[in-house]
Amino acid sequence: MDFNDADLIVKYSHSISELAKKTKENVIDPSFYEKYDVKRGLRDKNGKGVLCGLTEISEVTAWETIDGKRTPVNGTLCYRGYNVKDLVGGCISDNRFGFEETVYLLLFGSLPQKRDLEEFSEMLAEFRVLPKNFVRDVIMKSPSKDMMNMLARCVLNLYSYDPDPDNISIPNVLRQCLGLIAQLPMISAYSYRAYRYYNTNDGSLVIHKPVSEYSTAQNILHVLRKDNQFTDLEAKVLDVCLTLHAEHGGGNASTFATHLATSTGTDTYSSTAVSLGSLKGPKHGGANIKVMQMFENIKENVGKRTESNIYDYVRKILDKKAFDRTGLIYGIGHAVYTLSDPRAEILKVYAGKLAIEKGREDEFRLYDTVARAACEIISENKNINKPVTPNVDFYSGFVYSMLNLPEELFTPLFAIARIAGWSAHRIEELVSGGKIIRPAYECVLPRRAYKPIERR
Image (cartoon, rainbow, N blue to C red; front, top):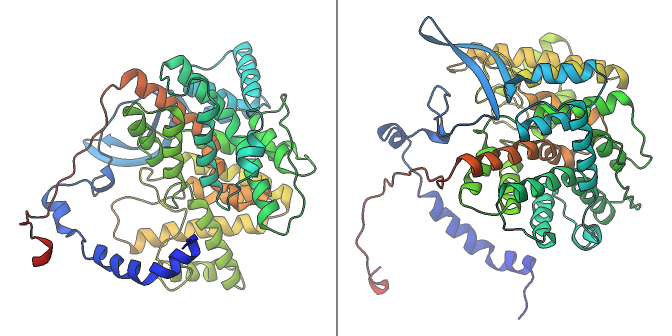
């Protein structure tokens, strides 16, 4: 008898539920983590990361040793030694786009001269074109409601189109990385269009080709919008978002996954798929969606948006009496940053500018008030070992919504940017690594004697 997935779910749902109960019996005693000095999540109880690698690609700082004491300071993010605030500010002051320059810097370790940047941008434009029939045979024939899964599937499919996919020499890996950096925006946009056509009431199917003279940010807006139209401010703000998300040290989950997979000697497409799977999680790349959902809940339940009413509702969320009742204020706090997240500070400025253009100043003020309320209340009432601050996810979803970008693409946009950092770290691991990454796990279950099946 033939069964489809739905039939199997119905047939075995009870059995699976009963078996699942057995897995819940295997909980490790929380006290064991202290007993064996385990750094859960490779971080100690004060939030300090366990040093497990070296890099020249980027640096995230939030603490300094002052008078012999570890002291929280305003956060700093540097790409190849350059402060990201200076990189963004330099491009904005020159009235040009900065993501391509950022990619060049991360990959090659130095800022490009004008001619270098022009040639590099031309190369990326050439690489944006997907293989012949790829859109039809891979994207259009099997659309998915989840764009991150679609991205991973498309990346793995690109392996089959590559004439030399398993060659991990640096020139070949660089070629593959440049292709992925250029093609991920197109794959994301086309996957979304296919999903809309096949799974919603949107009866039109619009597939725009990229424009070679456009930047990555401009092309994203160009291929997504049916009329191809966008303002200069929209494109510049999206470019800033891509620059800020391009890299964040070797220790974040998806980049560590890049190092881990690369250390095994696997191919570029498999390594990238591993990183995409890690980024998909709501604790990593999907956090800004939770922020948007939280703010929709706040707007629905706070009638008159006075500061007092907003503070009261934030307290309810923290007390697990409102929103999803987890006690979390999404977009507040960070594993590393203490007094400030530099990405959030930059993005807040451009969110404010975009809010004026879009007539959403009141909503921007709501974000600002919730941020202040959350940080103050958490610092007063929670047993934490460091200050809290808004992180980049707090504002990025709001920015994407003002750009009329669909929620389904919020996390893929993160991937479109972060592929630059993943590529740089993959190459660094191949050049400077050598050993497979193999952390230790302590087994805390005692030995047991085997019993034949008839005696169990």
